[in-house]
Length: 526
Image (tube, rainbow, N blue to C red):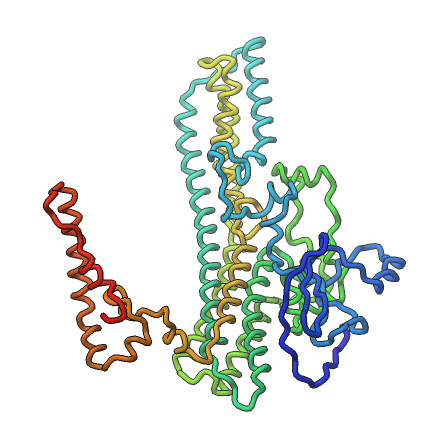
């Protein structure tokens, strides 16, 4: 990556406006700026020579790669940045994104639940249901045209209890893992919010440091919190490198094993495109077509390290430096910072525990075998009473029983990319947004908002704003504060009595007077 040498001059204040030219929106810098593309296909003359010597594999351009010779403003290099790297699943109209990937829990569907396909387990049950239909049809035909295949239905009672017990255990353990995974991500959101406030709000300005440098250090520290969350997401999905759209710009400046492996083995980032049959087989839940999710890790020829742990090391160093420089002056602030760093470590190990501790394979195999034996025996027990209706009855029963089994299998790993898995992209987007909200707070004058004319300190007992109360004596302010509770209580009591009287239909009862309303809501003279 080229090294940039920036001249020492004051950075002008740049007002940005978003423009839309054709299909390529960009940001226009009004003063000494440049066009910063935010999407679309941008032609780069320097890339023409690269296309002439294409390697056997195609490497996606990285966000952090740019040519310093073509920069019009060394202080603000252009790059193929996007405003929201987490938004693909929320905005994509690709049919594959409808049937795969965690669903967007914020979207509202007006379809009745029994008619919804997105999130349903039905696609993965197509093959098993077809097999059960053929199986029950074969048993029925043999029973009708060859020999009697019926058996006593007592097996339904005996095996039904065992199958129900096994499916209940399978579903409860799977949902427990799902709920535990969600709990860890909720704690991650809490920890990033707390550390974000420590870095931005509680952290004092370091003495003798350029204010711009101090601000950029704080923003960089908060970006590490987002990088930690995003790196955990990729680690839980067995994506060990750094050149991902939502991660590379957050960790490109860090010295990590994953960063070195990414630079040394760029071809490992490009996975071979799946053929139609393999992709269809995975979608239908055919186990023979499923790929090993750890394939990328097993093929690595360089150490990949532990990216979340390495980012956590950087965060710990920042907290230590803030304490050393006296930026966290209150012991409670230091305790808060270190406790949340420890919480991040606990979250990292906890999510790994959920991922790597599935239900013991003996339970999984036994429950699956017992369930399949039960549904395979259904036609033999239904044929004598249901005749040809045995076929649809068996398919319906198989859908109910196997559906519960398949749901437990899908949510057992809550961090994957199935439709019913946790929406980790949405959680990372929430963390990014909330860190930006914290950083947008201006803390240089913390009492400035108190002096606003919109601040009504004694509402609803008085509508007088802050500056009116400042013009009054201290005794009057104290008396108003002391009597606020009684004033509000009396007014609410009067409202209740008036409502009771109006419902009773007494025409002689007086309506609430405007004088009483003025007493509560008041004006500037109250």
